[in-house]
Amino acid sequence: MKKENLTQKVELCEMGVAELGDEETNDYDVVMSGLCFSELTEGELAYTLKEVKRILKPSGLILVADEVISKNISKRFFTWLIRAPIIMITYVITQTTTHGVKKLPEKLEEMGFVLVCSRTNKMGDFMKLVGRNSKER
Image 1: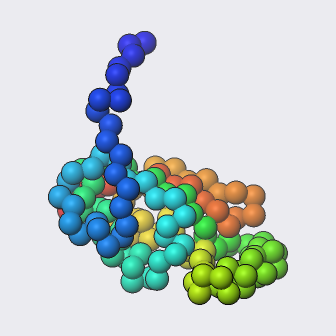
Image 2 (image 1 turned 90 degrees about the vertical axis):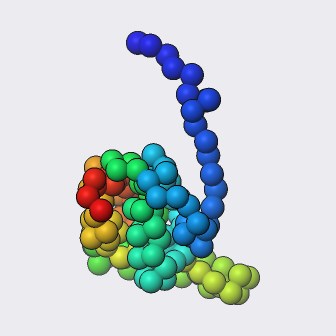
């Protein structure tokens, strides 16, 4: 197997959702998001996915790891019991909180991403997704 020196070919950029509009179209091979979508409103999430689709190269990848809402009612209730005190304390300190994203895989597909793979934890409240930007715009 041939080793390639990728350190010269990789550039990491950290930016917020508001900065996505300033980026060039078809400029990124991969966009990663960790625990960001759960902090966005529905409108902000739709904007973010639209902009990510725009800035990704055709067949580029979106990698997401975030809180989601479990499809299982008993797991949702158990998660709520565990999280309720944490949510209250967080709100008192920061005046904001997070929430699981409803139907995250479906949202990516609605925006035109092709779901490559997804994994959910045993409680169903955390998901890792890989989506590919479809070549169609």
